[in-house]
Length: 165
Image (cartoon, rainbow, N blue to C red; front, side, top):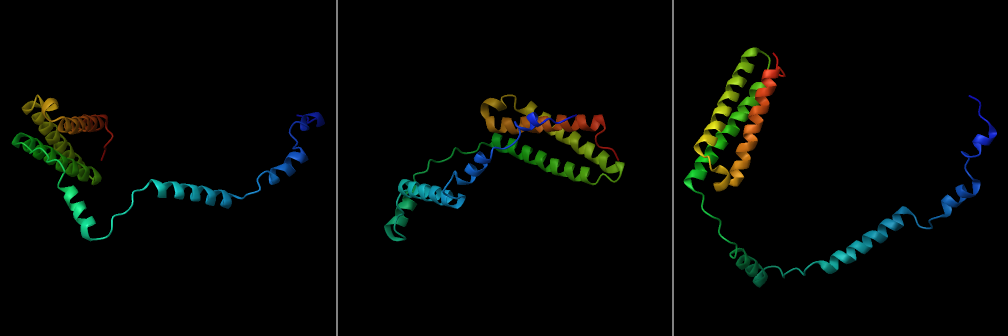
């Protein structure tokens, strides 16, 4: 390919624009940064509340304010039972992960698959025992749904052959 001088004209830099680049800003980056920090410092100082005096009545008013917190609702026995089952499922997930980490032989994979079956059984039991879980305990419903999705995903991975000895 031949390069013609008229093609170079469009690519060449104009010497006047080069000299103007260095003189465009009279302030450096450090000056701009310090100006912005000073601006934000004055804005934040004016928007914050004054600090109470240390000790004395200021400390007592903080303690009085803590007593005004609304009481939480007591946990029912049914909710406790579900939370205990979810806790046992999470412990089984830890055991499952440990079995997968030690995949030196096929025995650990068989153990991991057995733990996965246990997890699936407990999740199905939670669903079966509490058909109205979403209405009564929506937070626990979300946790149980996530556990169920993880169980199905891991079973698919096993059946697909992602974990081989």
